Length: 243
Length: 326
Image (cartoon, rainbow over all chains, first blue to last red; front, side, top):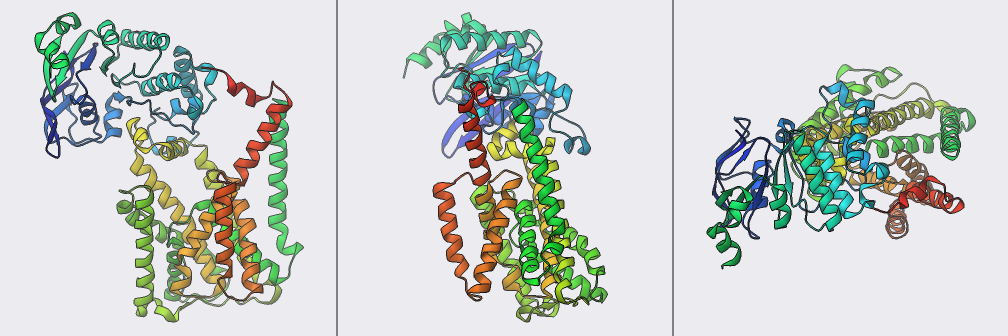
């Protein structure tokens, strides 16, 4: 069953077609990789799905319900989380506070009561523990290493218990040891029932982690399926190696 | 841990001492020259804490003046009870202006609010039938006089400053405040993790406007005559921003300290060197010094100095724990 269904998604920037009649699907419970050469429209797909930029045409539905026209905060509230390419965290908030910002509360009164309820703090600390970040809980985001920021961003997105998480280059600029840790944590979160869609350039990372792969070329999917199958697809080889 | 505890004790003790001095000031120094400076200083403590919206202050002044004229209320203590109405009206105005202005960010937002401020000033100057135009708007004159004249205004301003501080303190510790801090750091990222940024910014804008509007109302009653070019003046906003930067942006005590240093200094210059705008030269100098030497403001810089000292004094001090490698 597909959790996220994208139909005929199209976006042009001036005369350039960034995403063109693009209709990939993300199966519930999968770790789906969205790959493709630079400029093939991967991040644009993310920005369109999460409501950061308006689409020209096409539609996106999540759990068989359309999310067209909703803003990023509403889409997040429905259960689609995302990370950014260069690990965006709040630099002047501590790691723990970074974890608490996404926590959702209902009602106006709850909004004006304490910044961290004890059960929220407990959950945040558990997540920091899970990511091996508990030692830096009180450190400002801006003072963390790049790898720690990547992990923190992933953890923070998880705090609102999304069902689908879009990861923009989770392996980008990360050393091999940390890469393994990030891959491992994604796998373990997936085992808890969270579906992932990730954009990534590191092919071995994608091939090891993903259960499904979609290849974009010039804003259009040219192949999809199991990693082993996609890897040997002539159209894919052509897109990556050809002109 | 004990270091932190004793630090807290000092803070609480200091707070009580400052509050006691503030409450007893008219008794300690009853001469009008001093209480006059005190009224304006406490006024700026409130303004700097609430972070004035451009022009909100003047709007509050006009609202209260017009309301008092409309109900035909005589001078006395009763007009103080109408002050919250000026706050409500200013909040309503901020809701309308903010709805449009908060579609923009950062520098653009500042420019849009300044444009709205000049529109308000023009309206106040030209709606002569309503505001009296350039001839000014008069308030009822309080029946008390002499040395006591400033005292009720001082307490009214102090009450509003304390209200601003209390609200600011409460917000800082709330979920809403955490959302605002997140917006300050990275607005798009905040949106991506579900913070309804526009609603949050609008709420903050409206709360700030309500406080500033009330302060403007008390100011109008104090000076009993208001003119468009003085109460709807960008210099009020600039003074406030300078106070916040000098004391320390994003701290609770910073704006208070900035106001307590700058406003008496400005009044000293104004009273001793005539109504010239010499103080602007002084402000420019302070602005330059703050930006070049103290970009973070006094409170954060001093705080850093103290924590660095402690870190050097003992390796077990909390600041040293931050050095843990990735």
